[in-house]
Structure formats: structure tokens, C-alpha cells
Length: 328
Ligand code: TXA
Ligand code: MG
Image (cartoon, rainbow, N blue to C red; front, side, top):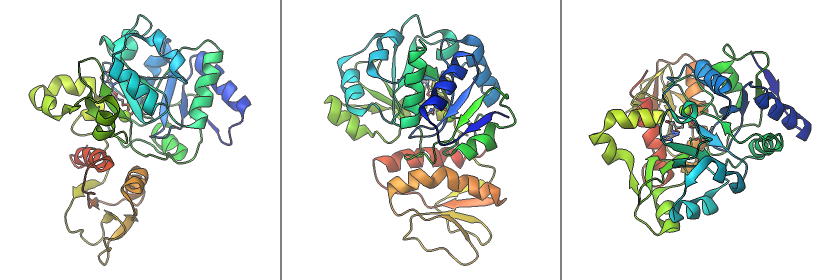
């Protein structure tokens, strides 16, 4: 079932870091979504992540570190543009895919010669990672703390709801309140000459281009040509990901008895259950996953969503929604 830690003190984080070192799992808050962490150099611990999530073992994991000074050990080369991105956006909602070092074993990278690295911007996550480095830990592998294919958790309760039945008594769940961003990190492949966005997020393509001075591409065009390979590399790019139990219907007039998620300015038709009424795109991202979960708690058959239009974070929202709408 896993133990629950709230109001985390420095002591509690040191205990949690020791738990990781002992080979157990620690679910922890980040600014994007909650992660299910394991010592990224411990094969058995990492294997338990796959078991608890019910995720295929060839899907690579993101390694989380506390500071840029711990980056070198995980990678063997880094282009100038990736250094610029790291300096600008870390700690933050961005994952860089880089050529791996010997330390990044196949059991973390899914057998690829690259590794995904992120410095999250959340004080509990950074505290935990820093304590783990103090114990000579190199990094924490952590996917989103949900069962494979389901909605990522943005609260500790949602983690327990997803994984409680699968966690062991020695595992921990750290409660840090609701994640501020609410959508998973932007994933940027930095192994080519130009940055390539594999998963859109709060760090947008224009932010990447402005920081690097380079033209960035996104994975959409690549996916069309090479769907299967891309799916393995980025499981979040699978068609039917991020799906609640309810059927998700996009941009249609909601039927009575169903749920609705839409910007505040859109009125709720009679008989429709309003699940969220965010007043900005940022708030839309922040509340989206908990609103989908709420729809499931209420056993709704369908959830209607009026997608936000425009660029930036709205692109990431629409990316996840189009996948949710494909169902399970
Ligand atoms: O915001 C986030 O990124 C959260 C928090 C916990 O950090 N993590 C997260 O992890 O979303 P996960 O495993 O649910 O999604 C990470 C995605 C996966 O789809 C994986 O395939 C991709 O990152 N990925 C990891 N390493 C990769 C690599 N070397 N090459 C390509 N894709 C990679
Ligand atoms: Mg995930």
C-alpha cells in the first residue's frame, strides 16, 4: 500500500532518500505531475517501477537530478543549444534527450543510446534529490505515477488511487499538494543538429527557438513517417494515452448528464455537470487531469471538453486531449 508522508521536513526527505537507496520506490510531487521514483542505477528497483505501473519494459524513463553539476555523469556529449536550454529552463518542466554515458543502463533507457534528463522545479522534489545525491545516489528514474495509459496524477491522493494496490509497505508517497503546471514536461530531443520537440509542454516551441536561436521541429511530421518507432521512444505519444474511464468528447455540444470541462466564459448547459471552469490556459492545464478524475469519481459516461485554441501551452493541452479522446 505504501506509506504516506505529508508536511515533509528535511528529516522526512532524508528518510525518503534512504528508502530510494534501499531499493524501494518513492512517489514524489513535481511541478508537472507526480513521479514514481527509483534509484536510476538499481536494476531491481527500476524493474519494480515497470511492475507497479504495468508498463512495457522497453519504454525509457526520465532520470531526475537536483542540479546541473550532476548532469555530466549521465551523458557523454551535449550540444551548445542543449546547454542553453538547460541554463534557461532548469529547474523546470523540460526533459532533454541526450547521448547517454555508461551510467545510463539499458534498463533505464529502454536499450537506446540516449537518456532523458530533467531537473524538476519543486522544493520537495529538489530536496529529495539533493538528499539522495548526499547518499551518493546519482539520479532518480521516475515516470508519471499512474498505471500505464491512464491519466497522470497531479495530487498525492491521485497517486494512491492509481498505485495504492500495487505499492509495497516499504514504498513511500510524498504529499506536496497539487502540481502547479499539471501537464507532463516538454521533451526535447537534443541528439540532432536542431532541437526536436517529442512531447509538447509548458516550455513551448517558441521559447525553445528564442533561447537557442535555432529552428525547432516537432515530432508530428516524424510520427507520420515512423509511427511505430516513435511510439516506443515516447510512450506518452501512444495514441490512446492519458485516458480516463469516461469517454472524452472534444468540441461538441454536451449532452445532459455528462461532464463538461471548458474555459470559464463558456456557460454550462442545463443538466450538464461542470467539472472545471478554468479562467486561463495555465489554469486549464493545471486542473485538467484532476477534472478528468473527478468525472470518473462521479461515474460519468462521457466528459465533453471545449479545447482551448491558440499556441503555446494550448498546444500541449490539445495534444493530451486528442489522445484522451481515443479512449482506452
Ligand atoms: O513531467 C514529466 O516529465 C514527468 C515527471 C514525473 O517528471 N515524467 C513523465 O514520465 O512524464 P513518463 O515516463 O510518464 O513520460 C516520459 C516520456 C516517456 O514517454 C518516455 O518514452 C520518454 O519520456 N523518454 C524517456 N527517455 C527517453 C529517451 N531516451 N528517448 C526518447 N524518449 C524518452
Ligand atoms: Mg506518463
